[in-house]
Figure 1 (tube, rainbow, N blue to C red):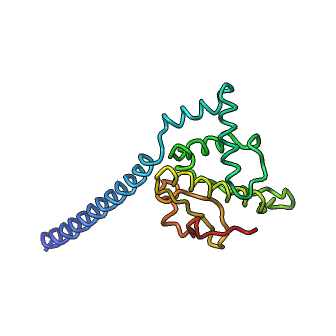
Figure 2: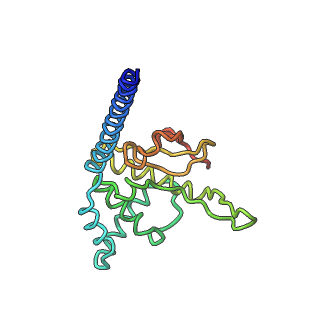
Figure 3: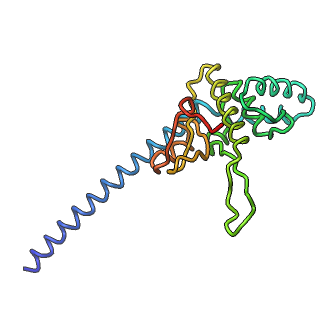
Length: 199
């Protein structure tokens, strides 16, 4: 009798371990596939070495006039822009120059583009309120980035990331590491071409 119990218990443990090993193998396969998809996007749209060269070009005072000319031309093509190029961040300028050359910044690929909210600074929670002017400017900037990449022959497409309450909080390149990490978290996404911000 003890031998029979030991055999049955051994079989039960064997099948549990076998099932657990199969689950681990399947999870590893899914994880590897996901990482490969993210790397495919990086390989197609980003190039850290080239990005560093463009950044050095943007930050070099000797190239200020050439950079300002390219930025001014890009801003003239954007809708809803109220700021001049002198108010753009170095990252914004880098994004423009890279898009004109068919690339996405590493930051844009990995972290997306967040919509700026300003703090109202009042009350216990010090909540954030939407700044519709900034939101419209960012929308115009994103539309321009997408079109600039498409002019370079890229099939780049931006999506608008929204909370469950349909409030937009950022933009991400379709297939990018940032967009893929939210693909299973219940966030709502809308293609940029199908999105109309509040005006």
